[in-house]
Amino acid sequence: MYTQALNTSDADDRHIEDAGRAAAFQARIDAEERIEPNDWMPAAYRKTLTRQISQHAHSEIVGMLPEGNWITRAPSLRRKAALLAKVQDECGHGLYLYAAAETLGASREELVDLMLAGKAKYSSIFNYPTLTWADIGVIGWLVDGAAIMNQIPLCRCSYGPYARAMIRVCKEESFHQRQGYEIMLTLARGSEEQKAMAQDALDRWWWPVLMMFGPPDQASQHSDTSTMWKIKRFSNDELRQKFVDATVPQAQYLGLTIPDPGMKQNADGHWEYSAIDWDEFKQVLAGNGPCNRDRLAARRKAHDDGAWVREAAQAYAEKRKHRQVAQAAE
Amino acid sequence: MATPNTPLWEVFIRSRNGLAHKHVGSLHAFDATMAVQAARDLYTRRGEGLSIWVVPSSAITASDPSDKGMMFEPAESKIYRHPTFYDVPDEVGHM
Ligand SMILES: [Fe+2]
Ligand SMILES: [Fe+2]
Image 1 (spheres, protein in one colour):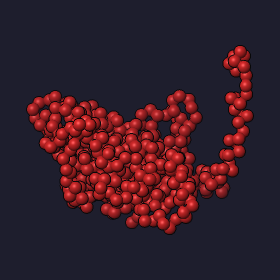
Image 2 (cartoon, chains in turn yellow, brown):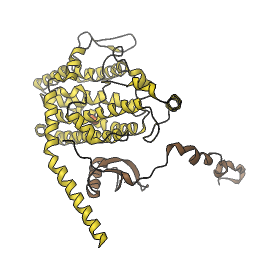
Image 3 (cartoon, chains in turn purple, green):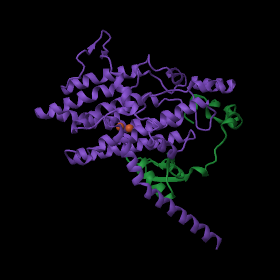
Image 4 (cartoon, protein in one colour):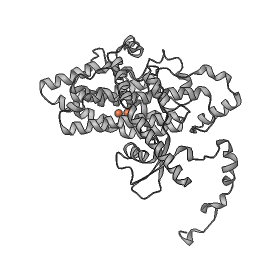
């Protein structure tokens, strides 16, 4: 994942554009053509995508932290190898996405610096702590599950480089969800303590996971432009409902209870969930979630600790270049 | 201090089945050796390929999208370049 419709299109920039080119652009979108980096595009389309793709990239990178917390404490070598591979995949997802964002004209370094300065958002979900091993199961099962729900339609996004990155990401995600569900299944079939641990993790993550799909449809003002540009194919509430409907039977199979006593299945077979606490969501986005400060501090430390490596690699590359130039001149 | 920019490379991978190298994406690296190593970690974690090419992105010359018509439309009217343009009776068999 993790594109969370945090803030969407910059529709206001549109009026300054050449109306003819904008109409031709929209006609291409309507014909399901893919827009490529060198094609003409409205400034607002470029800006919206740069922000969405870079937020998505930051989320992948910050998303390594809660799971990285358990790599050294995984209960077996099998679990450890799987978790390590998953976290490495998330790093890869971040890099594919930064590369896609760069095709729009921003540089990765500039995007990363914005994130480190606290000026760019990432998915709210990664500001929650991973307190027990069961949290690793829930993250794979539900957080990656929600991510997949969100990312599958993005494989058909109108912007070519983003859509192609998403196809790659989606191929890799399914192992993430399956390894998480397997952890949950093992715990759910284990001792009373293990079952309780699995239930506790589900209780803590359920609502934050539902918030991953972003604000309810009535509250997000700009999604209409993202929809018009075919960046977004389903509304936040539609995706959230799909996710809930897919998840309820999985939880039932585990013998776990979704922490929503008011939840019921309606006549159409959809599971209706209770009201989401959007104040909590706003607080987490505003920087007041349980781990916001920790996450940023960890990213800054990793970036600062790696500075000497970047400097050394650059110095070495420059030295070799000068030597080659000197040899060529001889 | 702003982070200095690192050169961008385009990555091409030849998959197991003997096809040509195919563009898979891009990455940042200070030199070609590091670019190949990073490409291996980033693009071949699941046996995707047997050979990697990296090319500095700045070395690529692309056609201009606004020349698309001039460049590619002439081919569209030349249907006689395709085998289906020619009638061969069924009795002749596969040709
Ligand atoms: Fe991911
Ligand atoms: Fe994932």
